[in-house]
Image 1 (cartoon, rainbow, N blue to C red):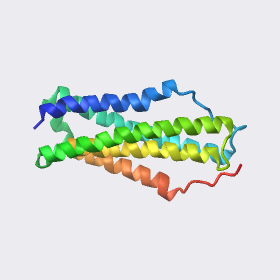
Image 2: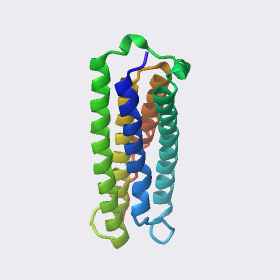
Image 3: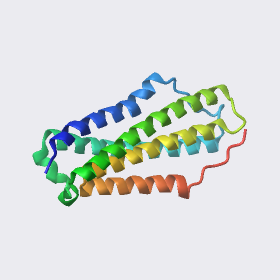
Image 4: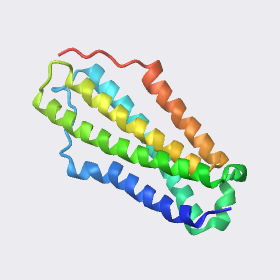
Length: 185
């Protein structure tokens, strides 16, 4: 069972989220991390964060495919094992609200990343600038996780539940079982 309104809004949200996450980097002057600007521990921590980001991209891509199929070819949506019991207008609106919050969260995170990369490139701040960049990137990944939860709430299905659970597990493993290293200047 598909909702024509959701079939219109979900691709729009996916496009906005993709633009915010992917194309924002095109306008940002990327600061690379090298041996001269960071010690080995910082580089390892940054590489771990990049791997988590890649896994989140895979989840985001799966939700993108799900959105395209839901919107353009709803007759094939059964592949994702929909939970029709949760297809209720109130639940769908809550999902859209969660996705709106995630979009705002992602914008704020991108602005923070830009600000912290600028500070890092100028070596400003008494607190480790790299730790602030890591915090900002964590904020972006949290926004993406909220976006996943919003997509799942809007178009509830078993595959979406598995993707959200996988995203939460990756997030918890990265940020709570591997505490960040305290960087020293």
